[in-house]
Length: 319
Image 1 (tube, helix red, strand yellow):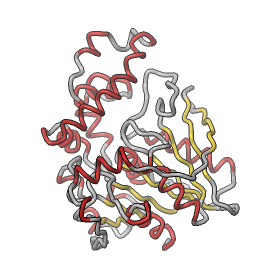
Image 2 (tube, rainbow, N blue to C red):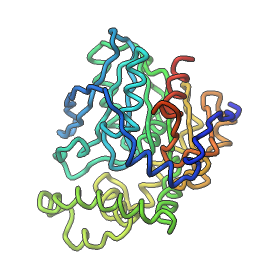
Image 3 (tube, rainbow, N blue to C red):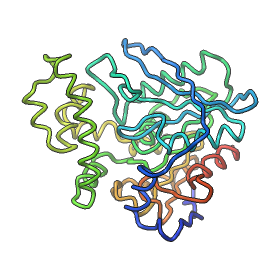
């Protein structure tokens, strides 16, 4: 598919990546959305909490929303999309990954960028309820990589799954991790790591055979976290093995349903490999839009409806 020419034009004050990213993550608010929580029990004995919001009229369409690293279903980049879709006749199922709903998960493992088995469980749960005939998935950052990997690694997708939207997607995890640990992103990396270690600390007492205090104290960077915990807890050899296996880039050529990737060119979290131009040109199902601005999930636009949110709705409506 030819590369999509973006029409995104941010306010003059939001052109810098840092400004748009930080404002969108810390200052934006979305009001007027009512969410109803449901717990999904997983095959391995763990659970995922999902937060539903509904269109005014009964809908046969639902969009599954996947948050980013250390996010949750109440983050504005999730609730903004849910509200817009609800207002336009589509139900929303906002997923909280394991341990991200305000309650610790039960197992030593948690969530990671390539945990598509959890997305599969959510989709299966929705299909079992038999209320929705059209399913769409929108992933943000880590959730975007997960959504792309899910549709690219499977040849037997449910017929109800009609389209994917991936925003600020770290398609190549090693490159994205390296970018995050760059000096210019140090403030982001410190914040992410602090949240991750806070959640991991209780597991030292719960699972002393799986992780020691010495292991925990050895975690100084995001790469260390993935080497010490993420990889070992989820069946990978080490951090590099996790990055290689969980990256969606290698699966993009196999995607066979309409898929839109929106990655801003000034997103400091992404490496060059996270802009899959060649893959998009060779796959008619893959639509790649690379706005000049937007930072990381910072597509600020008019009326508190972000550009990526309106683009997602327009994309779905065109299918």
